[in-house]
Image (cartoon, rainbow, N blue to C red; front, side, top):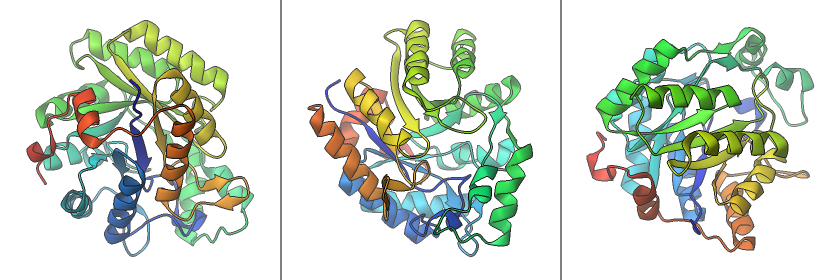
Length: 310
């Protein structure tokens, strides 16, 4: 399609606030940042929540409800909560957004993998101001496996169907694409699928052009015309290298402070809106403009904002 669906990943479940003062923490900050990202051109806002007092990643459904309701009241953007959560959360905790909120769309990590963030604590970049819990959290990922076994994924598929939500299928490595194919072949996922290639996480596939093309080619071979796709590059300049490839090849784009903290090599981003604005400017160079939420809802076959439980 000519128009591009831009997702903004507002605040992550693995990053820590000490990495950047720009990372929104409280529900009000997350809502403001999401609305700003939408005004800048984002069609979808991807959401985690944090403990307001500490900034720790949280699965608290009350915080999620406060955030998603606040965004819905202020704009028409597609609200996309995570089912990936953060380190230490159980499947039931991180997937509770499905039965509780019945969103139009949510993310679905399609396999298990190592997820290492400990080099962030080791590097100690200028501007980093880590609390003790943040250092412990980052260092603790030396021994962290994000778990989604086949049994886990089968449960999550059933929860998506019950909630009437469209899964955005997060593939961190090429094997995850074959996991998706298994779930489709078992009748647990419906076609067409929407796949997000998430590249650059330590422990999963690298954010290189060759690996991106390998992932895209494999997904196309597996799903043919029953596929829409996007890519998220973790870190700078990966975020915008992959965005350019998506724009050239007819895919969609994800940016945001969850994935990347820099606007350029020399400048840290101060808002999610800045990162979205750069994606919009890049899209214009390829004669592609941002899709509206209504156009994205039609593309993905979403149930509409009136059918959610918030």
